[in-house]
Image (cartoon, rainbow, N blue to C red):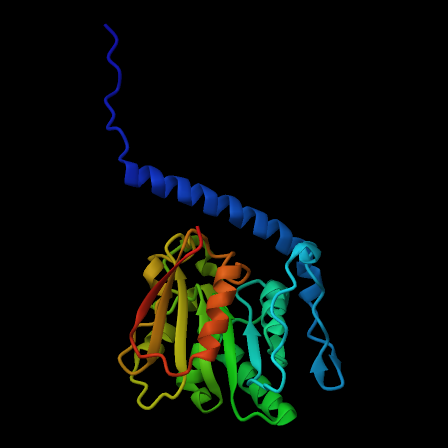
Length: 286
């Protein structure tokens, strides 16, 4: 007599999670394919025309996008500095830049740090010089920063350890390993990856007291982010920091800088300077 292996029928909740993960993975692959097309356009640093960055090339689907909201007249918001993640470049922000520009942001700038960079501290010092140059050129005393993944950690180090809170009004992070990620141990051969581990010296420095830090932190984290292990490492949890953690559902790591719902959340975060510390919201993009 043949005995069939015993199995427990999967529960509906597990089926829903599996389906959501499959959808998120398919979206990640589509975004990766599109990003590979745009990647060469972002290798060089921004060209400037008359002291302001040249417009980013439009993504292939841009002609199908709605016109959106026209920039508000008379408003001159602080510059927004965009900082990419590991082995990436400024092309990851093409969609977000277009969204911010359509809604009235005039000063949008990206910083490419070298792919040979091996230390978060060095990249943070480069960011500090970049921010000072922007403030001198635009006449603004403060900027807002949006950092994806490693870019958010570099910006946080600048704010928290190099006195950057004097210059950075709001720091928005997208899928940033604030307490370190344990994903993909073989990648630890790279010094930057080692610095993103939970037991690294950089993460330990960021756990230290940061009294009177003036920057407001807004962290977008996804429950389906496969590069953040655990996923809650992308939340800011520090007793001295003014932080808002926004949960995003239904998308993965690569989708965070390009998804329209996240872009809308970023715009809101940059406009709301009086958000209460320690609050937590949820945004569904499924």
